[in-house]
Length: 175
View (cartoon, rainbow, N blue to C red):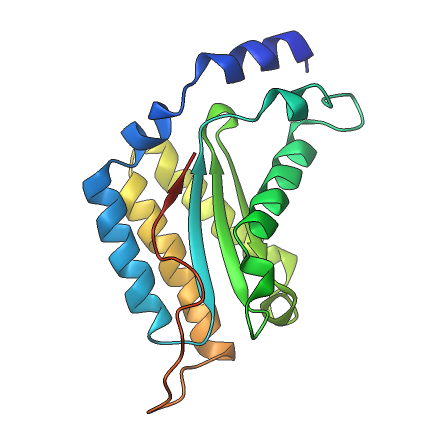
């Protein structure tokens, strides 16, 4: 991939693109769905939509460190930055979209990852990608959230009459 073209593509986007893709009313509905999901299990789920990679990431672009690897590194950055790695049960999941590259990453903490193999995560990424390609942004994100929730309910169901703190914000992160 030509590094110059990648830099141009990422500089073309601005922070407002994430808000145009996920406007406030959609972000509020998705946040309510995250909250409803988390009432059914002990996990934490966060949706992050990033417009473009920072220049510092793009300058690392090389033949051996292609865009898939950079996108994964950036998703891992947000996983740590947003505190998902630090949840009590180590069962948080980040659903990450990188608009400039039309790339998706699911990053799961070690407790849930112990129960879900890479093929299952990839199948969810593929389904979400198909929905996004068809312009079904909210529907695709809702479906992905429900799939992640089903895994968390299966492996970390909510215990009846147990008060669980909401460790992370339910709001969609748009950067």
